[in-house]
Image 1 (cartoon, rainbow, N blue to C red):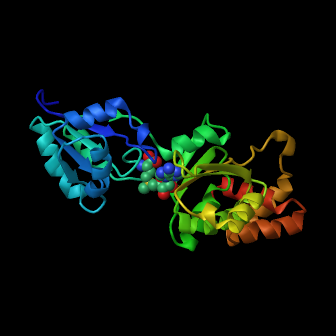
Image 2: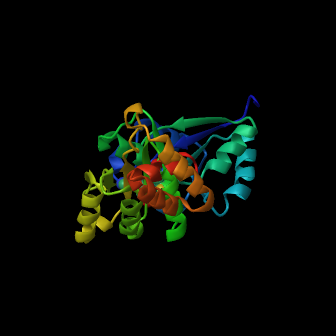
Length: 282
Ligand code: SAM
């Protein structure tokens, strides 16, 4: 690492409540020579609120790759810099990956200034197992892609989390209901740290009804925290003959049809076979 190179600070900003910015984040934002921001106009409000007068430059999804090279040159020349996104922790479903990678590859010190992150805030209050978990970001916007990802996630045994846009929330929950079943516990964490913060956990069938019947629940920002699929134990080990039927059908048919047909042939529950097929990675 060049001895006089500057440091790139990756600074978390609030996800709603401005008081969630940390004193260290403010100290860093004031001390660096440049702040690379996802949207400089958006961040201007936050910076003005806290009297931070440091210069800003735009670094977003559309210019990040090219911009990073120039920013890394300045870092190598000795400038300290901060990276922020519109809300929460940069790089978490936000820009910053290319800049951080290029900076590290160039030998620049990259230092995180931790703070708010919607997925961690949601998980911390959801009451679902948090010892191991998986973050799935945003699902594809189109129904086909979304359903494919949900099918792949149906057998995930760890708690898993999604970010979802408010206008797609109900559709997404309806697909989840169909593909995961009505009993799976899901927590909807909305508007975290804001005035209308709502954290509602319920079996999917109930949650979908609740969101459908109250348009207010389809507004604002939200995180979905999903209970993992039940662990299969030796007690409920599947009859090997039923598994064999499923395997044969999976050679010819998609997961959904194969498990439905195998259920009719063997008498084993369709969901059980469906989960097994997903675990087999079909
Ligand atoms: N970098 C951010 C973070 O650390 O959480 C996430 C940025 S991503 C572009 C924005 C998504 O995060 C929103 O669509 C929503 O799913 C989630 N999110 C952000 N703020 C939130 C909040 N206050 N309450 C619930 N979800 C939030």
